[in-house]
Image (cartoon, rainbow, N blue to C red; front, side, top):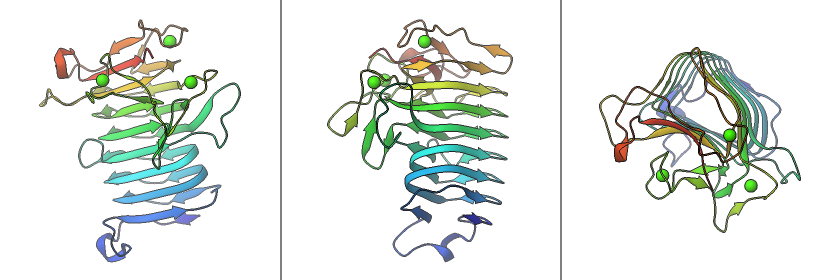
Length: 256
Ligand SMILES: [Ca+2]
Ligand SMILES: [Ca+2]
Ligand SMILES: [Ca+2]
């Protein structure tokens, strides 16, 4: 499927009763290509979307949600209007694999910066997957006031990096003891920043296992152990975070 843009025509082109442009796919999609921008649009795939290519930026109040994504590539920026207003969500493999990784999002590659965005594996369409994993995230610019989470929740305090963080649980949740919610690699070529003017918001990167993380020239030393309490880092100079955390962007492996 190739389109010039999504959402750029604004209210004139919206389905009745909806506030944003929508593109819904009930069957697997091999490749979805948007030649320019996606603005205030919801892209929803009930099955696998193997490849999403956006030639411009992903902007406004927009979401990319599917049961599973292969590769997602955005040539320019991903930028929400307010914190969390761009969401990239996926559940995982169609069937839980016996071993290896339960892929929700294979890769996300962004040429520019990522702002006010949530990228989350293991949450889609009212169902949860505590094994939902992300392969590789590469951001050419800065990562600002955004979160990347695989299989995890910030808990009832809604703050990333506190003791109640954990993997998804509950009745609508898939969780195999043999599988670990993993972020294979996160590389941010610019800076990681939160918000300089608010001490109540919280952003972060979390999973049961984070294998590789680089911000600018800094390569974080991550333990090969999963759910390691050593793998807890303050990523941003912006702070303080809520509840006295010294930064409002943390990276951690959840402990349970
Ligand atoms: Ca928490
Ligand atoms: Ca598991
Ligand atoms: Ca680790």
